[in-house]
Amino acid sequence: MNQFQLSKKKGSIYLQINEILKDRIIDGTYPLESYIPTEIQLEEEFNVSKITIRNAVRQLAEDGYVEKKSGKGTKVINNNPISKLSKGQNFTEILIKEGSRIHKEFISVEECVLSKDSFLFNHYGERCYKISRIYYLDGEPYIHYTHYLSAILPIQSTADFYSGSLYQLLSRNGIEFAHFQDDFSVQQPSFEICQQLEIEPTFLLKRMRYSYDIDGNLVEYSEGFYNTQLREYTVRFDV
Image: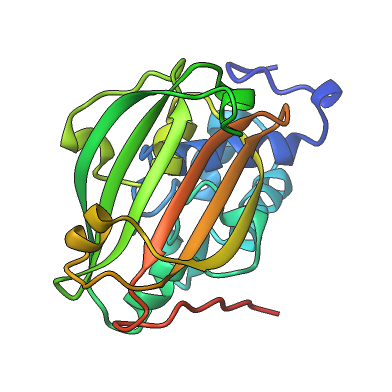
């Protein structure tokens, strides 16, 4: 037994170490593009065998968080907490790999009162947080996102609070995601959203995401409107 309280009663030791290392990647202890400690250092820290560490790191690589660099070590290549849930590449990752520049701008956060006939009322009760952000593609407004979160979460109203991934933010606040669902439709957004996207009122691709925790609770619901005249939406899977 060590400071992390590894125990065979909790399952495979290497998977417990894998989870600890993954949490360190997600919370920034091991930043993106940095190298995690060597196998020898991890063996000493966790007081386990070399094969146990190798299995834990191998699992990190299979989940897409790290990559072995010959003669250099193991590099962090992804810190997205939903990486392990799908072999599908994140859409913004696809754009960045193609050479595009992506940046987000925080618009607002507010506490909303939900009507009883709203589907969110059944999940959040009377109140929830509404967060609005814009994604820019090579300097042009491309996606308008509205996120709805439970009012019991520790939400702040500053722009810096939402500068990174919303899912990483929720993960750092103790949320463990179990599954996601994306629905797509074509709708005309509000006049305000069209203004923020700097387009005339028109029909756009709309993505609706439902994010659930390990207890089956809806943690986050989001609506994203994509100006596909700038760039079509792409789903890409590794097989």
